[in-house]
Each structure stands twice: as structure tokens, then as C-alpha cells.
Image (cartoon, rainbow, N blue to C red; front, side, top):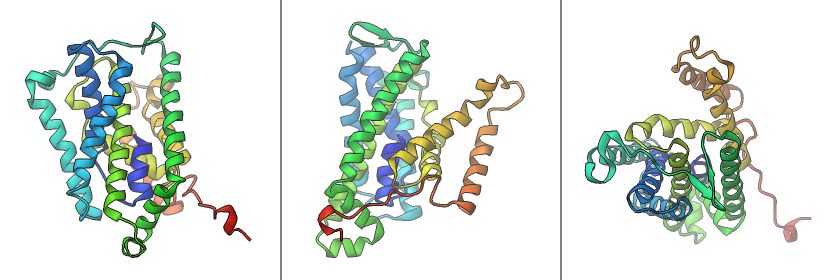
Length: 282
């Protein structure tokens, strides 16, 4: 999810707060296909990616003329629409009760149980590695240069012949697709989905991962995601759940962001520096 957010916010400079909506679409796609249609986990992953990417495309088109706060509010609204649809479409999503008993993922006939933490962790990191390689490759190509040009100066980019509409929509669709894949993994990890999980705070937390690590740098956002998740589970890891309230992590996130904005606004690793093509070097 942080990789997708980085593509939209870090590369194009669009402040989107709708990753929770795409995350929910991917989770429910896997949950519905596995429990009601008997599909396997692996066949639902591309469907979740395509479905989320399609909604990213659709939300990208009408919001292209919006910037800054207005875009953030519009994308936040989409996330809330998704959550309300999931809450009220009882015949498909079971409403607030959600969908339970999602089958575990299997590979070569072996179940990947979420209770066996290490095997599931390896699965997640395999997906992260593939996503990192694919998106790093994409942003190293003409697509990435066009997105960065739009971020720096949209009018100048447009005057240079870059179709800003096309590239913005592509960024939204690709950012949404990877959030859908993350939703599939979430569904087979928790083995149930409910609309209450996909709140506005999920989108905020993903944005925090990008800001903390460094916008426009995929390695940095993976580091940011690791730190944010580590902080989230710190009470459980230290056995201090009776002492540290769950709300404490939100306070800590806020403090970290305030400190980062004052002392290192570019994030821990900062933005990735693009080197000139070999033929242009002196």
C-alpha cells in the first residue's frame, strides 16, 4: 500500500487519502471469490489488482482538476463511499458482520497458515519484493520521468508534450492495483473481512509511512512501513499491552511526524536522486 501511495504522492505530488478504499476492494474481492465462488487465493490476486486498478482509474479521472486539500477531501470521500457500500450491501458483503471463514492461501498444496507467522511473513515479503522491483523499474522508465516532471511543474511538463492527464490516471490506477493486492493478503491473513477495518486512519497511516521514509523513494517507504508497523505492535512485542493503551500509537505517530517535519522534512532516506543517462554524463 505504501508503494502505491508513494507512486501517487511521492512521484506525481497528488495528495490522495483513498488507499483504504482500494485496500477494502482488494480484500472483499478475495473474500467473496474464495468463500462464495470457490476460487483459490492465487487466482483472486490478479482480480483484486484489476478491480482496484479500475476503481483507481475511475476516481482518477474526475479528480484530475483538483489539487492539494480539495483532492485530499475528494479521495477521502471515495474511501468513505466504499466503506458505506460494504456496510449496506448485505446480499454481497454481509453488511457490518463482514465475511468470515476465508480459506487459507496454499502453495504447492501446502497451506500457508497465518498462525505460522514465519511462513506468512515470507509470503508477504515475496510480494513486497516483486512490487518493489516492478514499480522501481516502472519509475526508472519514461513513465517515472514523466510523473516527476508533472510533480515539479505541471504546466511546463504539458508544454513539453507530456500528456499529464494520461500519466496521472496511470499513477492512480497503478497505486490502486498494488493496494488491492495488499487487501488480498490481508484477507487470507485475518481470514475474515469487516468494513470497520478500512477506516480513514488506514489511509493516514499509509501516508505516514511514505512521509516518514521519504517521498519518491521506494526503499524509503518500505523502511517507513516497517517502522510504523513496528510501533503499532510495540505493546504486544514488549508485553506491555496492559500498560500502553492502543491509542498511544496514534500519539506516537503524530510526534514522529512533527519531529520529522521540523528536523528532516524529506524523510529518513529522502527522495531518490535520479542520475543522468550515461550518454549525457561528462
